[in-house]
Image (cartoon, helix red, strand yellow):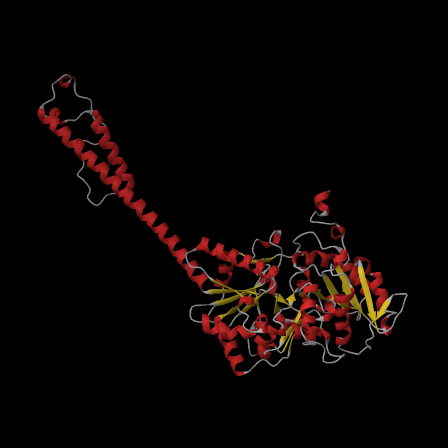
Length: 550
């Protein structure tokens, strides 16, 4: 009878629960037939209680139990399949992003504007390792990172444009961007990739943080005099980028028309001018994510690049007595320029001499026996170098030669020199170039100050390289001599050949300057105390800063 085909209540409840679960989760591919009873099992009637279960009812219950368990397994399999699809989709999406990032990284060639000096080459290599470490975390493909001083097959590699042919030949096939930066630029790779995605890599593009002159300036040959703010050029400290189509165009142009300018004075400006090509080439495209704020600044949350904008200090500042300061002057400037030196930075120097064509005990000056010349001063400068080498203690490792209208911070220079090894031949200051498009040489421009290690001077005098005339340009002859010896000059943007007003405000904002030059139309005493005078922390010996003492 019907009573014999009923299962115990537990089986009914199990089947009801499974059916409810199936309705919620949706039908499977093969929907089983509904069970004989839906809902909760009924209690047997009074007359059925205590009746023995027949073999037929046992078989029915076993079949029902097998069915419900099969249904449960089918539901679990369907859910597992759905979860697997989601997981595979997530893994695929992640893997796809990873492949995309790897491909984008592979399309960028990073070029660090490095130098051969041991201090600078190490900083550049540290940046390279940081870039590669970030890249390794993002994907399997590792980008190309080049150091300019290792590409230096000729003297002018640091001027960038002579490298365009090599970039075009070696990287044009699989590269979208050449990204340049300084050794103290810090790069956030993920943000950099996000920024570059916004720009069409198939076009001729020149990207960077835009600088402009506030007034026409001598270092830019008074160009755009009517409106100097109109022309934009990149701040190298923030990093800058050229699309590969633009690199290819520049390479072809340089092949057909060699560089015409003899001098390289302000490289960032001159590169922008060359690319602009009197309006036939692209302007600089400003990129707000290319920044020069310090990496710890609260302003950098959007930045793809930042800059280490503090004075390098590698150890305790060198001793005052380790720096010999030589001031070049002449009789006609004893009355107006020398008093400015004495009012401003002379007290920072422990050992200082004034070299003139006339002996004046009140200053006092030293007459080197070299007649004054209206220009060049090569004879006087070589006499100073010889005097330092032969008439001053060999324990003094550094010589600084400045003009009588140079404004300089000796306290900052002492900190900076803690990063350089005086047993190496070091020639330090603001680097210019002459004739670098066709050989030529680099030199440290004299107005911002020329710093020599004793070792460098010894090597110079061990050679036969000397002035070809007393009025030859001293800084250029010295540069030519060291180039012939295979000794590179070392550039520091903290030395300045011109006045503060001759540089963009944004450019100076991330510097701790060491020097400026010229008194034209400014108050030099005011300039010194605004830009160069020692602050309280500058007077502290060692690494400990005032705020750390309080």
